[in-house]
Image (cartoon, rainbow, N blue to C red; front, side, top):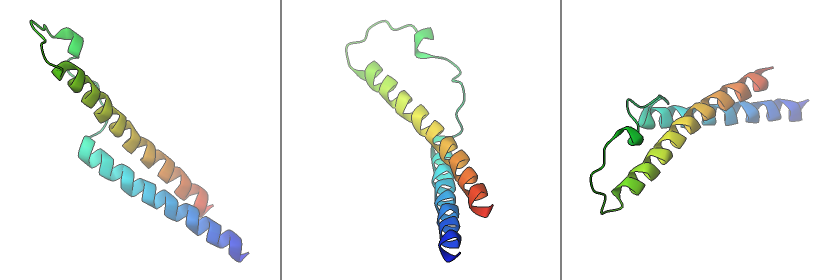
Length: 85
């Protein structure tokens, strides 16, 4: 009986940790949303540097971290519910 209680406490603690990490990611990167404009809607006259590729990479990274934060929250809440049952 003690092993089951310890296991449920561990699951709940893991869920709480994921919730905290997810909330921090959402605080820093924001909630995922559609952009007001996309890169393809802009007119580029000259592109002699690599700024467009860097901007696209950073946009993908930013969007991925937004969704990672929401995923951590959902998984964390689910683990807390399972740990309480």
